[in-house]
Image (cartoon, rainbow, N blue to C red; front, side, top):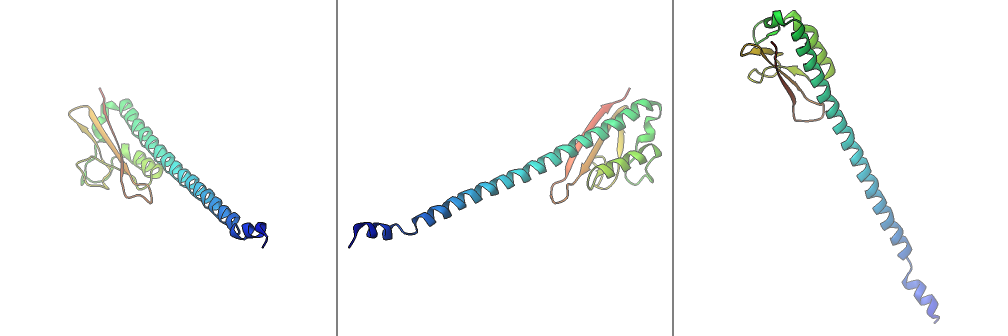
Amino acid sequence: MDPTVTRRKSQSGVMLLEALIGILIFSLGVLALVGMQALAVKVATESRERAEASNLASQLVGEMWINRANLTNYEYTAGSGSIPSELTSWVSQVQAALPNADVYLPSVSIGTPTVAGVNGNEVIITVRWQTPGTTGVRQFLMSAYIN
């Protein structure tokens, strides 16, 4: 019997096994990259939503500064009727910019758009939203003093 033939028979299939292991490692690397990309998209979306909530709250505070003589017209509490005309366009902007968005006081139930003037000139604005596909509710709270 030829010794070279015996060596070849004992090693048959080793190259196929190496190729399969290489494909497995490559596949795991591709799956990791896909997972990282999905996480990057999620984080970028959450960051954009937080920035949008901050900008909208700042916009309302700016409007209140301009119209500070009528600051009480911006106050809206649950069950007090319709949203004041000073807030209707802003609440619409919030609901259009953020998914499942509501604007409310922390002490008021979810779903009630509210802005409150507390302790004189302190204004507390809370914007809540829920990104589709997530269970947690995101929140941005701004407190400002308008003199």
